[in-house]
Structures are given as structure tokens and as C-alpha cells.
Image 1: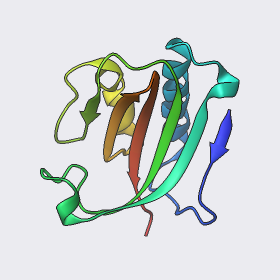
Image 2: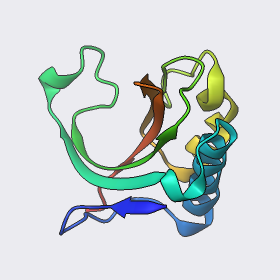
Image 3: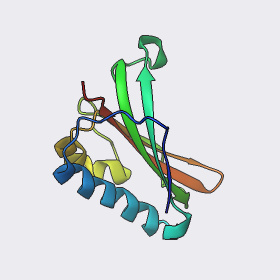
Length: 126
């Protein structure tokens, strides 16, 4: 698994005891879609959401740490999840309790060119 991150990664408001199992589920889901472990990428990034970025303000404007697992194999559908709006189907519906327990603020899956991602946003620790 490759790991990508910025030179200075913000600290996330998340506890290891809930974040690590969620990350494990994210990796396991990508593996179940046919992505070999050496071909997976774990990307951590700092994200700033401005008021104009999202129509329905999901995620709410603010600063976040985003964790993305990307690999071969497209998810069944592109989906989103937030504490205010449950996912209707797919892996995010299955992971809803883990996402909530970990303090996630937003999550989504996307597919493109035979690859897929699962991304989870955590608030930046003050």
C-alpha cells in the first residue's frame, strides 16, 4: 500500500480506537472489489471547505483532514454520507455506525476509469 500525505498534515479530531477499525473497513472494502493490497493508495490531505463549495453544506464549511483509500475496482454506485444525511445504499450505509463512532463529518465513494475511492472527512483538531 502506498501512502501519500502533505508535508504538514493537520491533526484530526478522531480517536485511534474508532479510527483504526474504520480505516481497516475502508481497506477491506477496496480489497473486496479486487484491488491487490500493494496497488492500494492511502491518501491523507488537509481540506478547507468554503461556504460556496457545496450547495447543501455537506460537509459544513470548515477545515478537515480527509482520508482516502483508492484502488482498482469501481464501487457499485457513487454515494455520500453525513451525520445529517444517511447513505441510501452501498458501503457507506453499511459503515454508517463506524463513521458516526469515529466522529466522521462526511464521507463519499466515487468511481472513475475502473478505479474507486472511499473518502472520509474528520474535523481538524483545534
